[in-house]
Length: 163
Image (cartoon, rainbow, N blue to C red; front, top):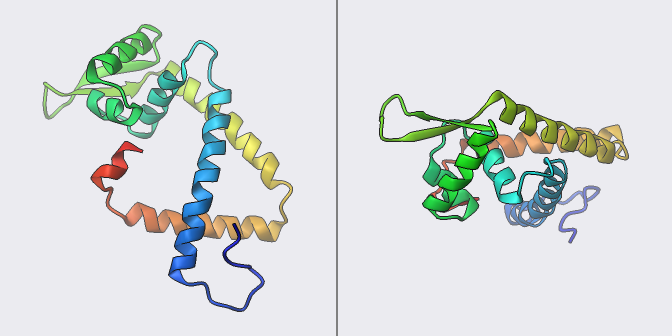
């Protein structure tokens, strides 16, 4: 759905901008998720890979935060994390400010696994973007920087933390 022609002299409304972002980001995320998962180790299930991804993006996260993100119960995610720990991909530690809270982090092996998938996905994206003109790539870079400024400054809503 093309809501705004970039050759037009019309100034896009904030509603048009919001609609285009809302329609485009899911397409990008679907491709990114599929590409990332295609580069996971064959012995990692999709939920395990999603847990690794969440922990990579949120070092020090708790079991309950991972469970909420993955959509599993606390006992189920605890067993999954135990399996990831047995494979030396994830480590647990006590929070420095609350010994009752368990924090999760990727081990060096877990980080290497995550980096490998990320690197392969970025290579794939670079191949896609190679077909674009330098001007179009500059537009994408400017747009992504603008989106980052908007969304980095937005406080996370409770319902958004599950995504």
